[in-house]
Image 1: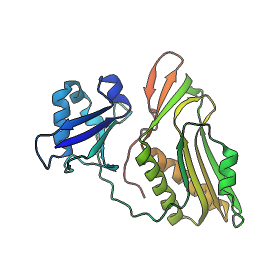
Image 2: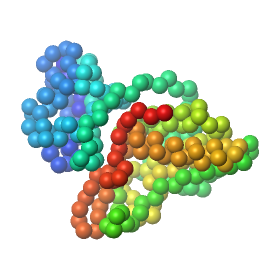
Image 3: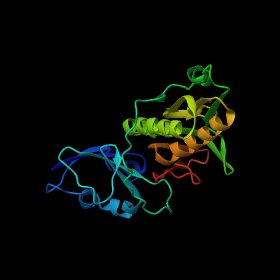
Amino acid sequence: MQIGIRFLAVPHETRGIPRHMDLTVGHDGATVADVKRELVASWPALAQVLDRLYVICNESYAAPDTALSEGDELLVLPLPREDDTLREVMLADVNLSPTLGAVAIVKEPLSAAKMYDLVTDPLSGAVVLFSGTVREMTKGRQTLFLEYEAYEEMALAKMQEIIERCKQKWPINKMAMWHRIGHLDISEISVLIGISTAHRTDAYAASRYAIDTLKQIVPIWKKEFYQDGEVQWGEPNEPWAPIPYR
């Protein structure tokens, strides 16, 4: 049985593993755990980081005992923190209604003005925009620039899911969520979230929920380039962790 493998972020850079490969597993009905064993057999260095890797199968988070089929594609990605323990979870599939807002992942600069125009609504008394920007200093260390990488197919689906959940929780009129990837310089916008509601309390609450949940479940990572020459994936106080959420 042949399985497609894609690596993102740390493993392919620090362990010399190809970003894309086809892996032959010896028997039908193999599980994610079987694939991990095959990978370690080919690249023994992976054993040192295996307990800090998530696996996604066909755009859903996969537990070790998840059974695989011929032609499945696995995405292998790391936890950014060295001291995090394994938290592989299988999130329940959510039956979503048709997309209720605009989601986008782009390499071009993001425009707050265009976001505002998109979500402004005559029935709304409040329009809240959240803009995440590249800051220069992090805990006393100077950042030169960032690079963002995403598993785009799944990231877009998860962003749509967040919008749907927000619309279930609050009376939102319009909502959009955009994220930029690639090279970003200091003060450039990395993420924009726009929400319009009749009253400001709902817009503020939904905006906070949306950005916090994006950081938890959307497979987008940042690579930080410091002035002292160090390069670091993620952010020490904001690890990406696809945990169940409400």
